[in-house]
Image (tube, rainbow, N blue to C red; front, side):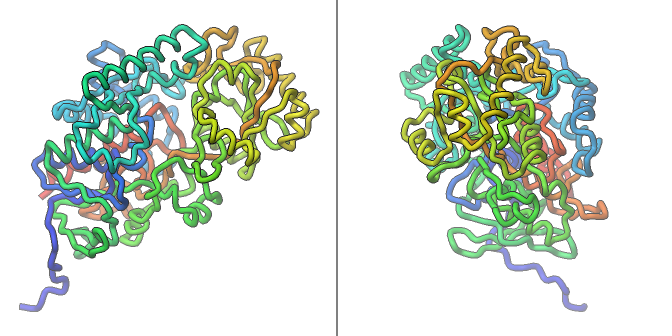
Length: 551
């Protein structure tokens, strides 16, 4: 018989499934694969696991989920799909109807399986979809992991990408922002204090939001399912046999290794938000990312070399951020933009968008209006006194921002305009016009406060519009704002089961992708809170289930 032209390599390790990445997509894939009886290894390229997920708000947008059904909150498959069509449309193959249906239909498996292993999921009942007035829009589709005792994962917590352990929940955030200006905010602040104190008294170290997701899933994957998680193990290449992916080449702690993947390889290693060269070439901007430092896009490049189709490489999960300073990354701002007594202006001193709109929309508007900026977030003294500003809580950082010209104060708007380099006449006219809208309760230019999403972060004690308050009382403060992001949206094109596709639509057998390694099912928009992590987790599950059913 003739010699085999593709002899099998000698593998150092063999698993059914190799997962590249340790964020939501990777950990969800590992959980579902092990639940299906498959052997799994999770590879993390850096010395910290959890990726963007551990650093995030931890919410998952999961329409028609089992928690809603238990709470008798009305939702349906039909409404969820109608909403996705109304908001996302079909900008490319990644957002086709089959993928949308797969996402909605995969929610239940993800939720019920996670709960089976002890993950405590809770709803954020007050959080609106980002376009709740559109067909199928709802309030309360967001799901998160309940604050989790990170002591349960022992020394693994020391290598988590999460910056700190605080028992914060998603619905805390909007109320804590006004903790000393509204009774509801004060109550929620007190609840958080008691929650934290109660955890300490019970000998627990509670972490919420993204840290809770990451830690609780590592508890299941690593400790309960006994799946190995390798740190400092970047993917170097795929091993192919006649067009099929059969394994990977990695470097673990500097040692080159080969791993056989009998059922498949899941690429879940994050986007390319930290790769400035790729961003300049593909997006025309280096970006101001808020994600994990290991997001360099290597898995996407490797998949492309293997023949994968790419989409949305010019896009990201955009938003507005306070400019970085002295080693501190850009501070992504969300709720602060909706609080009254504030506006965002361009370098001419003019408004250009609804400051309270979803962060992706605001980011796109900033890109379209002036990619290079500058932009300024301007507020009067009531904004500083009444509301929690996450980006201005550290006096040492405030000093550095002041020295760098990122934080500027002045007693009058005219003086402020001079300090930030905008035309004082134009800024005065902009504020005058905005103040008129604030007193009338209707933003006649950009509709700020019209949507339930805008009002979610507003101040209900400010009337007639909780998002509008006139800028009248000095001193005034301006923060330099840049175009930021929560990660890149572009990646390999996948089908309904997370299988990687070529340009002609054919499947690269044995190769899967989810999370920001894959082109977003959400297209160029952001339908609701957790539209990154929700699909990442669901498509991680779908990929694992498909691997389990194959062969």
